[in-house]
Length: 61
Ligand SMILES: [Zn+2]
Image 1 (tube, rainbow, N blue to C red):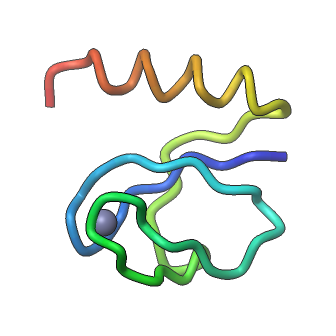
Image 2: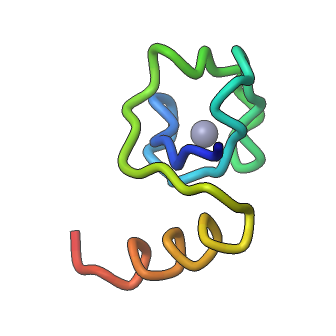
Image 3: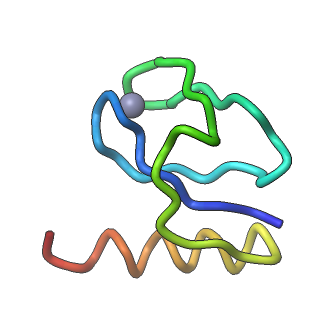
């Protein structure tokens, strides 16, 4: 299971494994607690997750 979360430091979308407790943001290098971050979507496979990220990013915010 994968989750798409929002970095609470820089606001960007990133992909993490749902079982992971912490994740380093590739953009601002913050160490995020996955539970604290806002989850915008979940996906079963990495491929599905990256497709989701792409469609989320293309939406106007
Ligand atoms: Zn960040």
